[in-house]
Image (cartoon, rainbow, N blue to C red):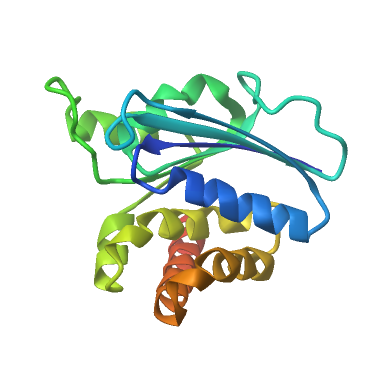
Length: 194
């Protein structure tokens, strides 16, 4: 069993939080994990990506080779396209539909969506709206993790326990909002995949 995940977005969107949840859940499941991350030029607004590799066998490299990613989870649609060469043939693309427009020549949204949808396994979700409707606009990343959860080799309960562990210091209300975001993301993806 091996799962290679690329997380993509811009600074401040919670890419490293998703990675931390996956790391915590993998360790709890007695799996091997390697993670690598790259931060952009600025903390907020710069590109951020993380490679997360989970396996029941030893992992030798923390970087995912091109063509070997099982999925790309992006909190920003253009950032998802940047990592397409890493996706394996039957891999999944999971992204929020809301752009983070930080450049003057940002592509047309319809063109972005069409490119993403041209891949057979793509899940586009208005994760930002879902998070906002839940009263926690910062949970966009957790909605997307929920959407990806059925494709990850770690069971949902363990991922939810990792969310509880990581958000515990922020209080019960924040823990519950993030769990709710995770569950709604999971339900939405199940409808899309079915």
